[in-house]
Length: 122
Image 1: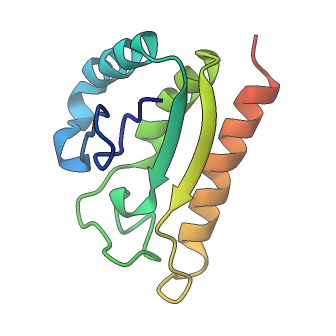
Image 2 (image 1 turned 90 degrees about the vertical axis):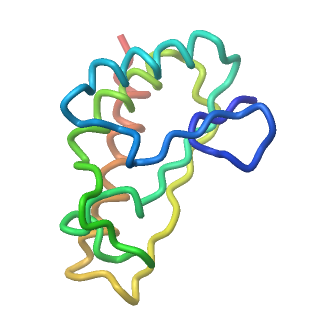
């Protein structure tokens, strides 16, 4: 199984938040699409550390210039529509550092969007 974001397994692909240019998300969408086309199954691991600290303060290393959750939504939908999604995990939530449960709510919202996309595939 290929993993787009996991660099610890041989034969996998990793893209760090610093590599993703929010002004050219179409280019990244095409890269994800190519990856999905070449994969049999997809293991999606969402690291909450990648999001901007304004959205995810409850992580061990908040990002001052991290990703916006809105950037990820089209990718989530595309991954679900590929019908290759085998497993999802959400990592790096640290409730001790969370403020007003923002990070927990972000993780729950992302998971809700994935489940909703699965239930409403057309």
